[in-house]
Image 1 (tube, protein in one colour):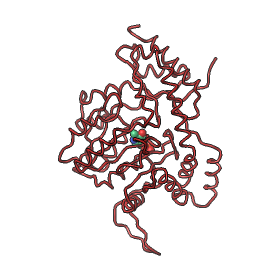
Image 2: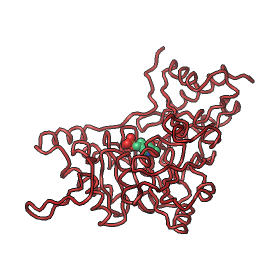
Image 3: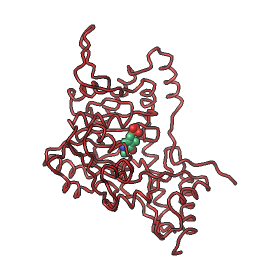
Length: 382
Ligand SMILES: *Cc1c(COP(=O)(O)O)cnc(C)c1O
């Protein structure tokens, strides 16, 4: 019999939040205001009291992080080719040049040895990406940054609730950027937040967020930097605020589901046929995604075909992400194939399986059974 379609992700929004949004809509003030201040305060508390400012998206947050770090034309920023294209687009957006280095195929994050080798006179900042919520080795990253006098803008879009050696991502480090896009572990529908070092930086972030405006007293408006329009509405902030008390439970549920994936994949046909599992790092990640890598050379299907087979069994999946340097915009800027072999192989064969707080353990079993079946049916070696 037909089962209900299982998407690869789905937000959990409770009735208290929905009622809270209705209150904001009725309040007479629906754009940036009290709800944003409350959301920023809650986020700041979550990251150990560091200053936090919200923005309209994770992309806007990254871009403003780059501006605050003083990155602009002529500068290079080292980043990962295996990310959502927003990461390097923001580097181009501020007039700088993204410098990609290959990933470590085990963590699927920037290889820090290659990162260190890529540091050059024009390098201004590092932008590591925490794919699926798994941070890089933060001790090593910041040792490199300090040694070379570089700023760090962490693309922690996926890593709210992740940690490094017992400290939350955002509670340590330089500039840390989160996204609250609908698919992230905590959502404000769209939105993002930047963790900053001090109030002076937070003040500048606020100016970049809204037309460069500063206010001082009655009628004392001044504009002294070129800012944009990147503020978050109070309706969106209320959604994010409504999720904050549940974040720990959401992430615990993700963790339990991820554990069950490992149990179900142990001794499975899929693994025997070459499917690669994610690193089983239960200490540091928030399990934003559970991603396998398909052994495409030994399958009769490509990734799209594999996803179609899952879909036919009522299961959603995702491809996060194709290697960025192979997109037309980047090829036109001189990036070519065979530059970053791990990012290219994994970008072409990585598959995001369903994982979200409201999912049940039985759903995990169902997904793994389907993956096994498709691998067996499509294997060239079986
Ligand atoms: C989601 C995401 C972004 C961008 O966030 P938006 O809120 O969608 O603008 C940037 N980088 C990574 C790694 C992401 O996952």
